[in-house]
Image (cartoon, rainbow, N blue to C red; front, side):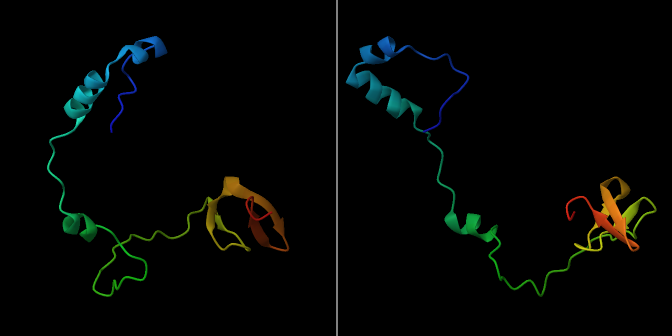
Length: 98
């Protein structure tokens, strides 16, 4: 059931005054008349782990390492120079690996 969090809240005193018939009527009124979505259509959009993606073509533009970047000697990720923590024997190490 959807809840409208922007609606003004009612006191507990007001909630106790509602009759059972009023609560049932509100429940029926709040139910949506939307048509159920076909489960097969929804399932097609999910990617399963280990799925065969051999026929898929990936297009990613790979940029060369920039002048203000370095490759960490421990995790081998390319970071911005602001992430450089220390340099030991010519090896550059990022803040995360220190």
